[in-house]
View 1 (tube, rainbow, N blue to C red):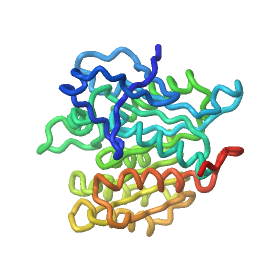
View 2 (cartoon, rainbow, N blue to C red):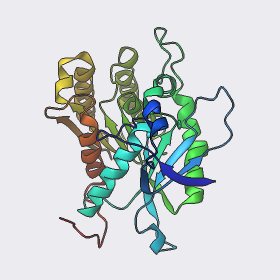
View 3 (tube, rainbow, N blue to C red):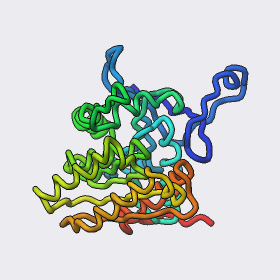
Length: 292
């Protein structure tokens, strides 16, 4: 079952759901063009997995019964889906990225209410100071077992061309997925990932991989806002990027970028723009008008 997707968004892409004002307003809500909502499975009351999918289809999707598309999966879909879909459509106008299906992986509630889910689902290890953390394994298994097959069954996808996008703690999960199941996604965008999580878990995981395996045939874009570098969080991201560059993993296409003048939150729009262009590496859509 699906229905048109209706959300309200800010310029930064976060869903601003002000219940008091929306309850009093008689104005119609904003509908994101050519987008749908799906619910995945039947969740138990205690299930914290993101069971809502927001899907934006390319404008050409209805023109052909056989054309297939890469899929860009966006974590934090409650806040980042509209931004990512909008960025991708703008880039498409200039033929800077290929046509793609955008899928927001969401909890179906205002983004400001999702931190408990982010703490639980995006973190790869349990940290005593943050009860309930450490369930990234469950989320990754759920995506591979339920979400990806569900999307592939509904839409004309290219199963061998999937991108995973995450910001901040979601970026931590993106890198976790890259290390644990590099076969599930082929392209990765990690914007300001939480590289200092659990006493630098990512550094330990990368060291283990470097010892056992030198081949990593993926495309990865990693970014951090310039103003973040003054804090341990941002410094860890930059150090992690330097570590990856020094590995020279065979098959990896790696772009590491510091975004001038950007803060943690302000960097995400630029990171998604640059990230999509970087991971698709010049692959563009044919016959798309450049509107000026």
